[in-house]
Structure formats: structure tokens, C-alpha cells
Length: 73
Image (cartoon, rainbow, N blue to C red; front, side):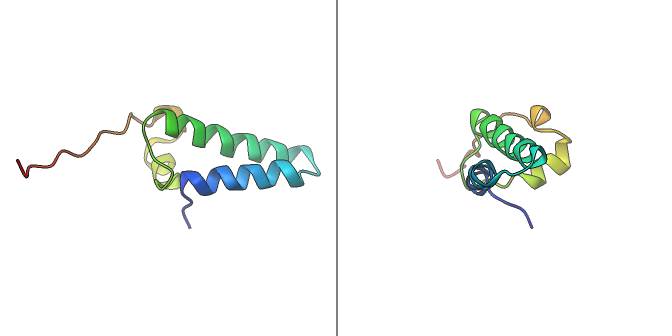
């Protein structure tokens, strides 16, 4: 199941708040990093994270989001 960027941010917040072991903090840091990088590349809160990671391997390799042009002109 894929999560949106907004859900990744919510998961990161939850993991930071409930972290009892260092691994939970690392998971939260990764979730936060992925969401912030994708938002910086123009993706929105409703875009899904996993399909991009599956396609490009890591968040740094995901290209800037291109707005879809409409040919209605």
C-alpha cells in the first residue's frame, strides 16, 4: 500500500513522538527526508511516495514534477 507525502509526514511525526528505540527514529528521519525532498521537487501532499521510489530507486533521483499541459487552448 502506497502512502501519500502527507501520510509520510504524519507517519514521521508519529514515529518521532513514539520512538522508543533508535531504529524508530531512523525510520522517522527517512520518512521526513523523503517527504521534504519530494515537496521541494514540486510534488504535492497527495502524491504517492512508493511508486516514485520504486521507479527511481531513491528520492534524490526523482525528477522535478512537471505540470501536465492541457491542450484545451
